[in-house]
Image 1 (cartoon, one colour):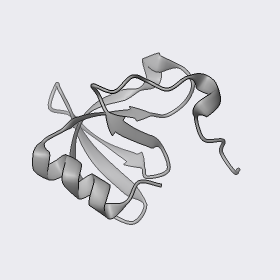
Image 2 (cartoon, helix red, strand yellow):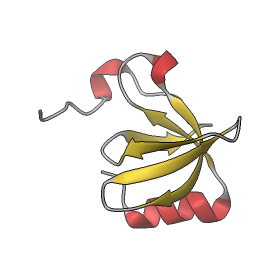
Image 3 (cartoon, rainbow, N blue to C red):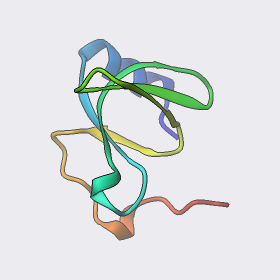
Length: 77
């Protein structure tokens, strides 16, 4: 899970981030952090729509290379 400090740093700096939800790159969400609570993060996409995403997804700066499939965390469900 992403920490409060990381989320605050992304928000303050206006860092464009990538949210990796599964192994398919087409399902990634790209945008900036707007707000968060204990369970969710609100991301504003480039088209100005906002989405609420689970904090257990992988959050990384968009300029960083997307990790390979085998390095993504495995769901505990």
